Every structure is written in C-alpha cells, then in structure tokens.
Length: 325
Image (cartoon, rainbow, N blue to C red):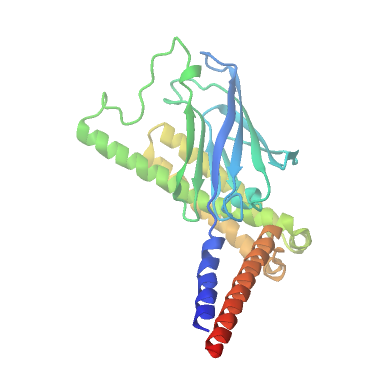
C-alpha cells in the first residue's frame, strides 16, 4: 500500500509542473524597404514575422503582452495572426506604439502560430529624434516588468540621412559631466520603467475586450446594456495617446514630462479597466475554457490513472507473493 501511496503522491507533485507554461518568440523575415541610406521624409515599409514557439500547453502567456514601438512618423500598423498556415482577419492601428494582448496570441501548444506585421511610415528628421529605432519589441508580465530574454530591437543606422550629422543620444558624455551623465541615465531608466508599468492596464483592457469577443453573447449584452463600452474604449484610446506622448518625451530627453504622461496613461487605463469590471455580464458569462486546457487536463488525468493502476498491480502481486511465503 505504501508503494501505491508514493506513486499517487508523485503524480500529484508532477501536475503543477505540467501546467507551468513558458512562452518564447522570435522575429524572422524582417525587411526594410527601401534599403540603404535615405533622406528625411522618405516613406519606409517594415515587414516582419513573429514566430511563437509553444512550450507545454500554450503558445504564449495569457497574462503577458507585447509592446511594439517604432520611431517612424505617421506610423500605420497592419498585423494578422496565422494559425496552422491560415491567415486570420487583419488588424490595424496608428501611432508609434502597438500593444498586443496575450489573450489575442495565446493558443494551445498544438497550434502552429505566428504573427505577420507591417509598419508603414516616414523617416523622421535627425533633430526630432536623436536615435531612430525601426522597431522595438518587448514582452511584459502582469506588473509591467520586462520578461527575461524577450527583447528585440533594430535601429535605423542603415536609413539615416547620409548628409545629416551623427545625432547625440540622451545623456551624452560630450554634453554632461560623468556625475550628471549617471544621474541622466538613472532618470531615463525610471521614466522607461514607468511607461512600461503604465501600459499594463491597457494590456488588461485589450485582454478583456478580446475575451468578450470570444464570448460574443456577453459582448452583445454589454454593448446594449449601458454606455460603458464606448466609455471604456474612449479611455483606453486616451491612455494610448498618453503613452505615445510619454515615449516622445523620452526621445526628447524630457524624462520628468515623460513620467507625468505615463502617470496620466496609467490612470486612464485603470479607469477603462474599471469600467469593464463593473459590468455584471462579464461575471455572469465567463468565457468557455480553451480546448487546449481541457486536453491537458485529460492527458494528465490519464497519466495519473495509468501510474496508479500499474502501482496497484505490482502492490497486489507483491502482497500475494508474501502470503504464499
């Protein structure tokens, strides 16, 4: 009986390990058109694909999100999720920031998933942005912290205007003493951290909206029951505008102003999130579980049953042998 108990205990201990999901992604097929050195105001098109490498039971962590940034002016984003080679409807957005909710890109690990991304914009002038970033992708957790080993960035050194003088970055040692440079870099890190934290409510709002779209009956009742739907979306857009302004202030080295805009974004994002939480239909109509979760539970239950049956067989066999002796 002791052997049977040990086998059952082992299965119980392994179940939490089986449910731990670790997502991974990488950027492939990134192209910048036209290539080479360009002049200010030149239209630029960036194409790329984000490949999601599934781990255990899902392709991405539902509670996380992707924050994608570009320094191109008048940026227009188009992206679509590709599942098992099939392209989904395209999404679009404008502005230098794009936030992708984990709810949108989380699928069972059996699904081959990628996201096709296109950015169209114009090359900014060197006096407006000191260091042009073509594209930057960061993954954030529920608290706005950068997830480890989840960072991608490509700068615009290939597309700088040839005749323009090399721009000086923020906190340049040419302009500042060593002590002031250290202080400047510290303020920049704090400002960037507050901007990341301010994006968390927006990611949560996008996740809840995606959740409602998955459960369409709840979304319909929510839209028809009150005006909070439009209010939540309006506040979400305001939060995004503040995030955009905060990033622009960081590019201009106005870190205190960037932190102010980040706080404004955080408050607006939380107001939007609270508008959604106050809706009773969300509590009354939770989304159905994803098929991948059900399959994982069935597989683990099956493994546990098999181990218990085998342990019981050997335990009964050993007991008979002892009785014969």
